[in-house]
Length: 131
Image 1 (tube, rainbow, N blue to C red):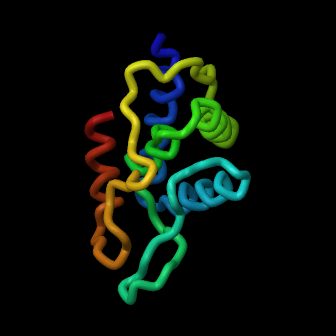
Image 2 (cartoon, rainbow, N blue to C red):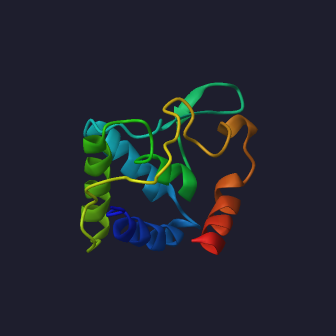
């Protein structure tokens, strides 16, 4: 029970390293998507309403990638990819007991770029102060 806690702690400890330049997180999300994993959308909208690739992501939206209503196997596959990419040592979870799920349709914590100011950077501050 709660086997997810150690790996989630390691992920939470690593995320603040991306606060000032989180393009690497976005590229990793794109890579996961290209591998066929069901991550959050990497599409955004610019001020003219044109579809563009997401250019920034906040830690809460990044965590939502593996806390959405997809299969546990998909969640574990995403966490496994993060573990490998970041060299984390914790075991993969065998359960997700007690974790609420995000909506598949709306798992971002910010609006599209057309309406966004500097929320991703502000949300990194909130995340760092609460994690």
